[in-house]
Length: 148
Image (tube, rainbow, N blue to C red; front, top):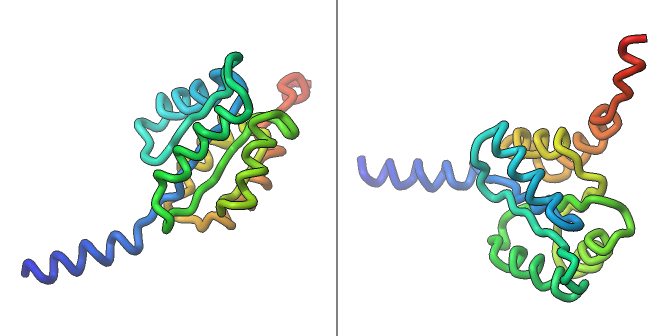
């Protein structure tokens, strides 16, 4: 029975994987988004926030992100969100994508982060990224148009 349990646990570990998510932003936006997501969904594994503080240089932001990337197992898939295209967080992540393998989506908001957290256990990184891009146009609405 013990051998069966070990094989079963090994099989489960291979089948059940989680996509690591890193949110990178200016100031404390990344941390606030992660906290809000965890308030709604509960504590999330492999969900990280990295902020570019006023006193940080681009190199110090790069160091923070590298520390995270280097501590995520090589077998894990990684999704990185940034706040705005062409900002320092975006540029650093784009630079790191030349050496590290991950999906990078810019323009993060709470609905996209919630979708990523709830879908990452059953979608591949490629499919998750596609779904997030398709959903992105629906994550912002003009509420006045709903009622007119």
